[in-house]
Length: 97
Image (cartoon, rainbow, N blue to C red; front, side):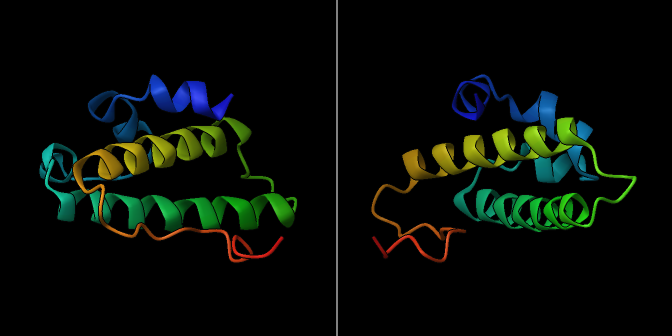
């Protein structure tokens, strides 16, 4: 489900609903700008996961899914721009079987 929503992700439409960003941050299409947005999305996802695990009243599943699809969409667009770059992965056990 998140793969389909990541494919339908549009930065200018989806990001202002998810994160408080300046218009210049949203319009920045450079690799450095993409990495900056990925860091902000990663931080927001971490906070949302923390709320979910704590069963906090402010946890929102739709926001969590939106953040995840935005993260995957930004990661895919950055991978297209920088195919040789080693992208930071959030899974810590990705090397283990």
